[in-house]
Length: 307
Image (cartoon, rainbow, N blue to C red; front, side):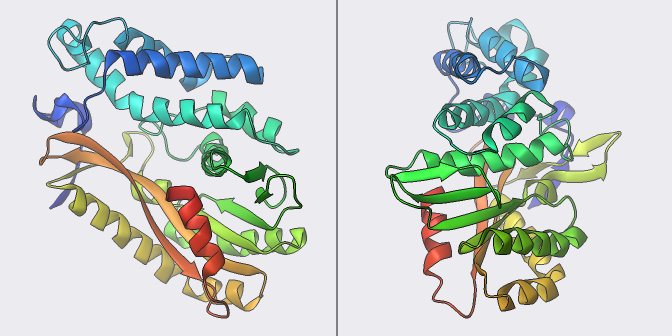
């Protein structure tokens, strides 16, 4: 069963104990240190939501135990401990992205990186432009961490190939905010790939469609509550299927153009589980190869990203 909850008021003590793999204070310190060191290397100031991530990670790291263990942060300040804990999934992702960004190339690197100090807290907001660039950076970073892969941030969004050799493919990344804009995003991405002249795939970020509530004032982000991980992930797959259905006509146009090898719909799905009592986060995804091809390119890209 899936239900939408207000996270602050509905968490039981057991649910506040975090994930099946407990967050440790040393991990929180490492997250903060990685972000700080990467920002110095990349010459980016610590500001915006990112500064809050670091502040809360460092605070959690001052305690001798994990946030919800005896002696941990929540035993000192229950509300702050809970709030800080829920930020750590994001802080960990950003730390990893910035670490990967040190090795990225291309004209678009500086443009993308300047957005990391914007409004990126996914619990507070889902429709900021900074989050669009963060998605692009996360996809590029996942590719960059693979051995032998050269990654550049340039038209259409990401260009990849073997290290030391010319690029072989491209990726256009889009993060639509509503189902009725998925088709438009696909057509724009196709145009970008066509201009570049390299075989490409379109990556559609689903996080806003998973978690944007539509109520930007009172509760901008949907927090799910599910019995088990499979229930949460099933909801994510349902949302992807609805998006694909809404954009069926545009998907046909994109594939008929002959320049797009396939589509990858993907996004991080998060929520609170009863069994085991935890805060669960996992990428939910679906690939759609161009029917005119053998699907090898989009399959290989998915493996590089999530394998």
